[in-house]
Length: 320
Image 1 (cartoon, one colour):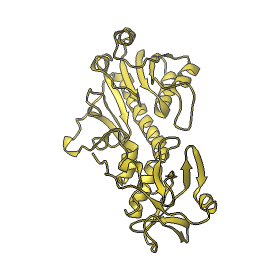
Image 2: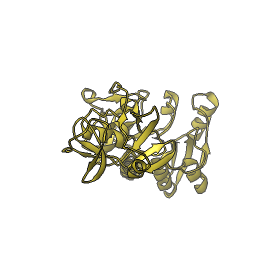
Image 3: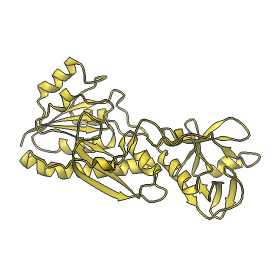
Image 4: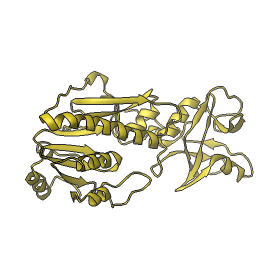
C-alpha cells in the first residue's frame, strides 16, 4: 500500500499520529509546521519539528499556505490524505481540495458543541460532564465539517486543562488509528453532517477574561481555575485587596460546597486546609502564580503578615 499523507500542525496529537504513520509501510509524509514551532519541546507541548527531524520526515515551515509557491509545493506532493492537528492558520479552500480522499481534523470537543477556539477550556469552564475528541472533515467554515467518529470520557472534578488536553490528544489518536485501519484498505470513509441545532461556538476569548468572580458558587470558581490551568499558558487571575498586584491561581481546584463564614474573596480555614470563600462554599487552590513562578498556596499565605483577601473586577462571561 502506498499513500501520501499531508500533515499540518503541531503538538502532542500531531506527534502521536506522525510516529504512527512513520511506522506504516509505503507511507510518504509531508509535514507543514506551525510558524512558531522552534524545534524544542516545552511545558506547553511537544515539537512536531523535532519529531519529524528525528524520523527523517520532510517538512516545510511557511508563515502561511496562501501564497502561490507554498501551494505549488503542496500540489506537487499530490497528497492522498490531509490531516490537521492544532494547525495555527486557516486552511484555504485550494489546500483543502488537494488530497484525493479529503482533509480531516481532530477537534478537542464534542462537536457541534464548543466549536471555535479554546475547546478544552470551554468544556471545563461550562461544566460539561465529559470531555471529547471529534474526527471530522475540514471545511472552509471552522469546525463545521461532517463527523467521522467521536470519543468521550468522564470529566471528573479537579481535572485541569493540561490534563484534559493530553487526554483528548490520546482520544483523538485512537480515532485516527481506527480510521486508518479502514481507510488504508478502502481509501473511503463515511461521515455524518453535524446537528446545527446543537451548536455552541466560542471566539478567541477566555471566560470572564480570566478574572475569578468570587461571588459565584464554589463549583463554578473551581471550574474556571481548572479550565485555565495549563502552564505556561495564561491562568485564572485575581487581585489583592491591599494592593493592585494581579496574581494567578492554578489548580487542581476543588470546591467545598458546605463551607460558610467570611465574605467572597476571604481566605478561610477548613478541615482540608486554607481555602477561598466564594458566593456559596469555598474553593481549595493549589498554587499561586506570579509571572512564571509557581508557589504553593499554603506557602504563599505563610509568607504574608496577614491573610489576604482577593477581589476581581466585574466582567462579562464571554459566553458567545
